[in-house]
Image (tube, rainbow, N blue to C red):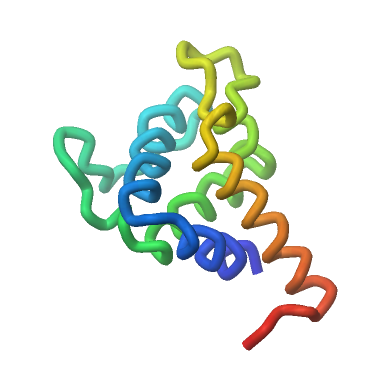
Length: 111
C-alpha cells in the first residue's frame, strides 16, 4: 500500500523535482543508518526521474525504519543540513503519500 501511494504521489512531481528529492534522500539516509548500495552518487541518476523507482527507494526507508522519511525530510534528526521540509517538493511528496495512503485505506481511491 505504501509503495502504491508513494508512486502516485511522486508521479505528480516533475522529473526534475523527483531527481532533487531522490538525491537529497540518497545523501541524507546514510546518516540515519539507511543506505542505497546501487545509488549513483557521482553523477545524475536518471532512475530518480521514475516515480516507481523513487517509491521503491522511499519504501526501503519506510520498511527499514518507519517514520524515518518524515524525519529525514523534516530535518529533525540533527543532521548537518536543515532538512528539506521547507521545500515545497518535500511537503508535496509527504502530503501526497499520506493522502494517497488514506484514500487506499478508506477505499476511495480511483482505479
